Image 1 (tube, rainbow over the protein chains, first blue to last red):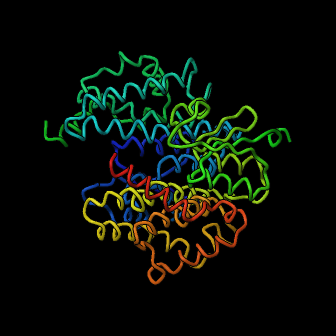
Image 2 (image 1 turned 30 degrees about the horizontal axis):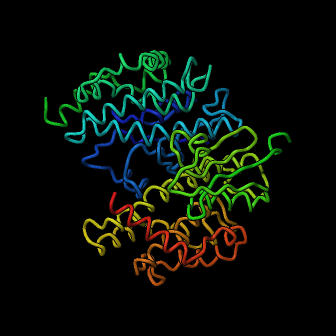
Image 3 (image 1 turned 30 degrees about the vertical axis):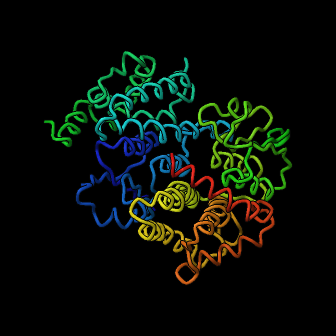
Amino acid sequence: MADEVILLDLWASMFGMRTRIALAEKKVKYEYREEDLENKSSLLLEMNPVHKKIPVLIHNGKSVCESLIQVEYIDETWPGDNSLLPSDPYQRAHARFWGDFIDKKVNVTARRIWATKGEEQEASNELIEILKTLEAELGDKHYFGGETFGYVDIALIGFYSWFGVYDKFGNISIESECSKLIAWAKRCMQRESVAKALPETEKVTTFISQCLGLE
Amino acid sequence: MAEKEGKIKLLGCWASPFSRRVEMALKLKGIPYEYLEEALPNKSPLLLELNPIHKKVPVLVHNDKILPESHLILEYIDQTWSNNPILPQDPYEKAMARFWAKFIDEQILTVGFRSLVKAEKGREVAIEEAREKFAFLEKEVTGKDFFGGKTIGFVDMVAGSIIPFCLARLWEGMIIDVIPEDEFPELNRWIKNLKDIDCVRECIPHREKQIEHMMKVSERYKLA
């Protein structure tokens, strides 16, 4: 029986990008459906009644919600040759720790830069500190997991397409503060799965500017 | 097997549901451990050394491996000691367990504690909003002995450490009943089932002490 895989998503969502990348890495065929968050589809509301958010992964009629949970699900359901997570329990926990860190720290802080008035300076300073912590964790490794691209890279890379937004609204330059991280991001962008999943930074920046009524 | 050997230390706090749930898992699997009590809110140099990023309990130390974050610790324990498994094998069931655990620690904790204590729109509204979230859990446990099915699992430990023996004690102190039996019969039945399980019963903090503690924590939170 062929697998039916549907992804309910939004082009600019750094969370949806994670799931797109994981599916592409595993060469899983799926149907992408763009959601209009102002007018959520009945399928979205039915498949994610708890949060009513994207991304939602629907595999043979069953929905999996929350992007990092989706990435693990994809890794476990389509094992293949390329694991996205290490098999050793401690290494796995280590990877999931950083995924959780990214969710708790990067996302919440970065949003304050453009979505909350008056907090741009403080939030952008905090974001730089958080990105430096991640840079320290990366060290001299090719990817966060070492030689192979995996879970933590997938958790973070989507935010790269939003760096233009943070630079513009936070009046910072992430490239000059975190050059190692930018180098890592460019390495990730060499992968087809990532290049196809991430929108162009300018497109995201224009989109947010328009949302805020500035363009 | 080399991985299972070696000493386990758990840095925790008697009142923390996050550290209590780790103890539930260790006891369920019969894993001996050394417990180190953190006198929170003061943080020991050991805690700051072992968990410099979040500076929180619990932290599990297994030989030279240091693990913070209760969900990560529970999964690590389950993958290292395979007796009495707490997570399902099936990837979909596992994803659902992780989803509910995240929902409980984020949404339930917010509505069951933070929103209730701050009660920006008044207490009645806060209770109503809390009940809307608890309704999802009520539905999820309907027809089952436990969230994990016939035996307790990951979600039971997450929900079981937070709801009956932490949040419910706060509610007792506030003299409110957020999940009354007539509206939440399944959740109340699940709580009764939990109390019969040894590894849960051994990890329930002392009731009056916990009520007093939760009232102090809520005062601190209100002023923050």
